[in-house]
Image 1 (cartoon, helix red, strand yellow):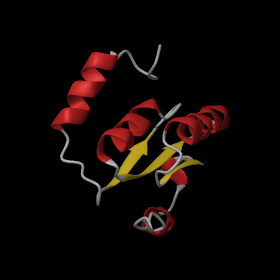
Image 2: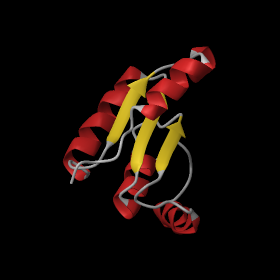
Image 3: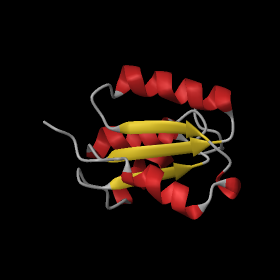
Image 4: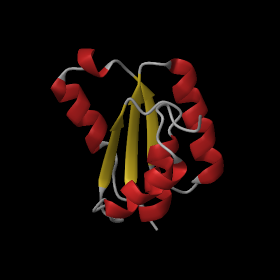
Amino acid sequence: MLFNNPISSEKANRIIQLLDVFADSNVLDVGCGHGEFLIRVIKASDARGLGIDVDEEAVAAAQEKAASRIPDAVCEFRTADIRKVPLLVFICLRNRLVPRNK
């Protein structure tokens, strides 16, 4: 299974087409798993991304995928239980995603 749920690649691509995500967007993927969906969104839009998941191995896999598939993108993956992350810390993490210097 490519995603951590039964969504097909075709459906994922269709969802990405329907999103209003642009190069100046920040995208958050909570429960990102191996990062496939967020990586596809970033690749399609050149936006900045933050993926959060409780599974350390999944986050490590997401980081590896991102490094090979979108090496120049601003995309971070973090291990955290979103239910235990205080809102202020979460906002600080999000705000670290700054525009690229190109």
